[in-house]
Amino acid sequence: MSTGDGMEKKINLTLKVWRQKGPDKKGKIETYRAEDISTDMSFLEMIDVVNEKLVLEGGDPISFDHDCREGICGMCGAVVNGRAHGPSKGTTLCQLHMRHFSDGDTVVIEPFRSRAFKLVKDLVVDRSAFDKIIQAGGYVSVNTGGVPDANAIPIPQEKADLAMDAAQCIGCGACVASCPNASAMLFVSAKVSQLALLPQGRAEAPTRVINMVKEMDNQLFGNCSNERECEAECPKSISIVNIARLNREFIKAGLLSNEK
Image (cartoon, rainbow, N blue to C red; front, side, top):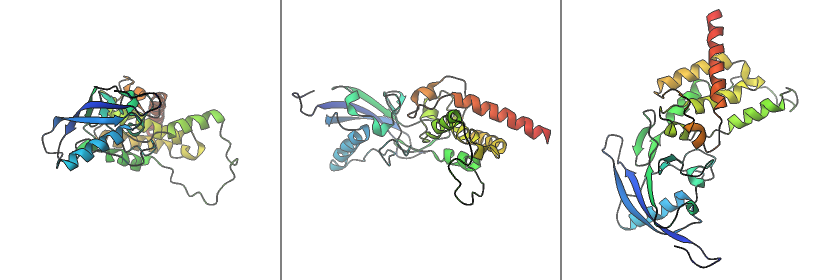
């Protein structure tokens, strides 16, 4: 449904939303109408409108994760019509706009599904497994002292660019949700690459990669089988080249540990 030139366009949608009151409760798909939705809205703003109507009618609003709504924090996340974060490439759910949908569309919204991501309620999942992987080694534990000059440690531009590309990972979990094995390899590889490529991270590189991979396995994530869905659905377009680097770092770390 559209209006005249220069005027706001609005659409009506049928939403099929996964509703589940808690991790131990039985869930099911519920159907809702989203009416007079401005195509200028974000996907989360659309859910806000639906929730306002549900509250006014005495219903239970749809629970979903969100925070900054600027594509930075990695909090938002849902599977929209079978795709993590929806149909737009390189976009978080909060950056997905309703202009990518047509009047009369049926939109299916489900939570990220993984054994490691326990469902909390509706579209909300517990992604603290990522935090535990970071705690296992995703940092540099050195005393920095005073602030060094910017050019005190020469870093080739190519490596600096690759490290920055990996550092863009926001830990949203879309890679896990899109992978048929629910693998966290893209997330872990981005965090390992970010530090392994820089001189400041090399000292702890062997212990870091071993500890992070071990914790990834402890959290029950699957392994990578090169399906590449993770790369396709990542909102920051993290490359699976990082997974190859993770594998190399892991093999080198294993060889070093065998020498001791």
